[in-house]
Image (cartoon, rainbow, N blue to C red; front, side, top):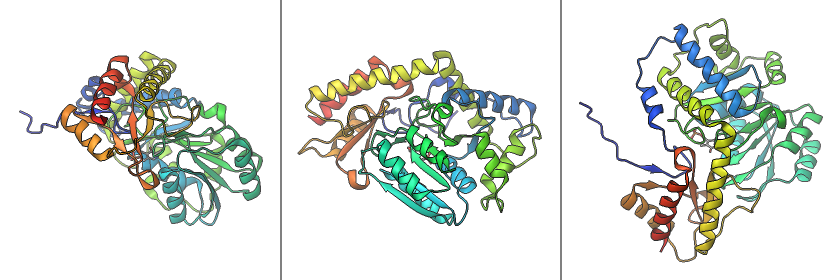
Length: 367
Ligand SMILES: *Cc1c(COP(=O)(O)O)cnc(C)c1O
């Protein structure tokens, strides 16, 4: 008999998001050894599924052990050498975290600042990168703290003109909206399992281009973070299968099944479903007299930020939703504390029925 009984929740927040029963079932299957051929079969299926969602043919595509932040630190520790210039487009909490990691790894940080909820335009991005001539540029594709979706095309184009590599934080975007790693020209991208992919937290999908892998080989010194050294991780996951650390086997099962669900639906159909329900939400919010925080055309479709109306206490609304309906959503933080609701309509919850269920409960709680 199980002795643990977590409450039933509807995870309409930014993450972790709702997990499909099939993914839980996969997770409860017997653990095999970290060098078992079956594990590498699963890891290979994970790689293929991730390539599809990222939109890449990158050979170096894998899942890092740890949550999204481990992918961020894998990117920074491997591709931002000490003393190098690291340019970051900053318009929210997670871009700040990228700067903080860069600082800790001894990089010289230069920032292009935007207000929280705005994105950087093509001309200003170009001017910034050509002026600073950094070794590495980073941006957050879907800034979960604000709801803004930053386009990467101009960033990648300008960065490549000055010989810089581009890191894209795709923690919230993967599985939720198109990224197009290869088409955009992104060199390094990382994500997580518990947001757009609808799996439990624990792994960080990661991809690096052939150019980035070349850069890895020319590092003067090896990565100081042994655990996230891509050279060592590659020796484990690629043909040599040389022991590095014990992969979290059950999390791989979960991700493998989650990616199978996405493949069955078709990743483009999944993106379209997120967009459809985003539009439903926007229409209903506007009919309630509420407004979206991010300008139309720059919104993350599956992570909606709605302004808290005058005279409404956002914490009281969130508490009521959780107590009455078991619904979790999030508030804002930093400069947006108390000013926005952050509402995820992702994966199994992004259906017409579930969106209506949420919006009815939300309308009642706000009233
Ligand atoms: C959630 C998030 C992270 C951090 O991921 P964790 O899984 O919490 O470690 C980084 N960047 C963005 C954009 C995120 O939304």
